[in-house]
Length: 99
Ligand SMILES: [Zn+2]
Image (cartoon, rainbow, N blue to C red):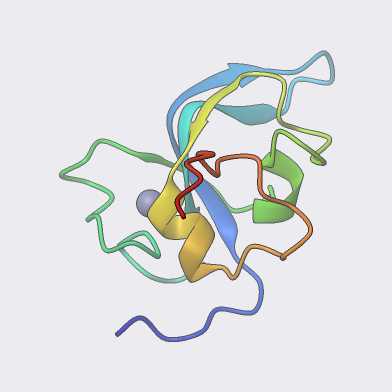
């Protein structure tokens, strides 16, 4: 069972450089707790070839609300769940009504 992470940074499969010359995450993003070697969903950073972005908050790469989400292609759903996605934000919920 994953422990609760209050505030995480970002690990991503790719990157881009913003106009200020700051590295920003791109591609698939995962939540990453600073000081650890794996993502919140349990991927080892080195083996998964993920880059760390200790200066970027997880909240800032959420496509619905984040200010650094321009190049984000996919948000890891397991990390999102591990970070406790808020109930009023469900960008990745599949609508599948059942009786
Ligand atoms: Zn993940």
